[in-house]
Amino acid sequence: MPHPSLATRASLREVRYDIRGELSRRARELEAQGRHLVRLNIGNPGAFGFRAPPHLQAAVAAHVPQSDPYTHQQGLPLAREAVAEHHRRRGTPNASAERVFIGNGVSELIDIALRALLNPGEEVLLPSPDYPLWSAATLLNGGRPVYYPCRPENGFLPDPDEIEARLTACTRALVVINPNNPTGANYPPELLRRLAGIAARYGLLLMADEIYDGILFDGATFTPLAPLAGDTPCLSFGGLSKVWRACGWRVGWAVLSGDPLRIGDLHHAMDLLSAMRLCANVPAQFAVPAALSGPDTIAALTAPGGRLHASRRAVIEGCAASPHLQLVAPAGALYAFPRVVGPAAEEFDDQAFALELLESEDLLVVPGSGFNLPASRHFRVTLLPEAEVIGDVFARIHRVLERHALRARARHVA
Ligand SMILES: Cc1ncc(COP(=O)(O)O)c(C=O)c1O
Image (cartoon, rainbow, N blue to C red; front, side):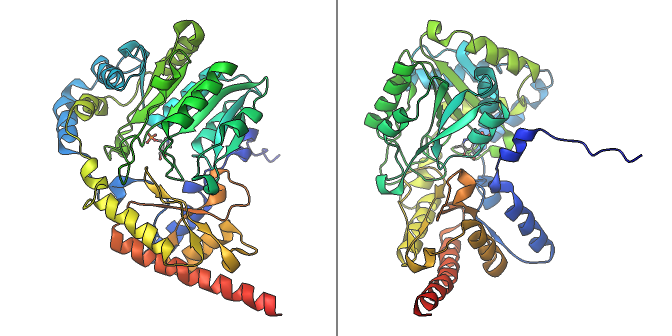
């Protein structure tokens, strides 16, 4: 008798992770056939020639001989103390090494935190568009994502009243991604204060994904959420992947702040789940003190004359040069999220558009619907390629959109 095939977890069917999904698989096939693609789909600095700063590399290399044992489940004490000190400097209340968790990237810590928090059916307020790992981790841990809109008309900033309107008796957490992936929005202090106020009034956990906290353009400044949250429980996430260009090292941290009485069992739950995966990658944890107390190496890249500054400019100019594109200029992070407008946007299917860019122009982008944005006319590109490459990328995108616009005009005439 034939054996039935194995069933997998049903909730996985609701999960989308288009950043590395079908399009990415098709891209690999095309590359195997000898095509040269421009991959704009992942914020992977190392893949674009960025290197982790030498003082971080030296710190890891010097400590390999001490990296054999497992560490404490929350991480190496010296790494946790460095994160706590960094957070004390920026005003996080009661930041201490005991309240720091080191993980294999922020990704693992997002999963651990949501697993520690959620009972089946409980709700998490997430931005739309989101960074899709947040939705996936919510669903896979039994929760329900509830999206609050971040509209381009409002600079991709959320409206606190719309967030409040989505609260139910089941809401447990409010996720804030700042500076934002995929939109590049940088949240102002007054907005963050209002978001913290909502969490305080309704007893929610604030989850602040601040992995891009050092990547800002044109004089924008980052405001951390935890100092504004005060006694309200808040988990602040950061790591080496982006600001220090070391995403392959898999080092992230989460800092728990707020009144211990309100935090309740969360610390213990996260500690227990961390213990079950033993510890995070040890050698790379030795880079954390070097990163947080060493020289600033990102500002030279984002300031005028820097490579990221030039690439962001090229994206802004590329969008401005096409009547088919509109862009809210990213204030921070490593992405832009342009919108297709006008006749080219009629009968628009963002997945089909992304596939067309891949098949006909050798460009790999992520369609906006990959960020849990329904009926999206957006797509995301990373700012990581060199400016000249980006100029050429937008010329190719314009070429495809011209075809769309021509077809729309022909439909109107017919
Ligand atoms: C908003 C956001 N959060 C978290 C992550 C995951 O980071 P890590 O490499 O630390 O797992 C990313 C990666 O792109 C991200 O964009």
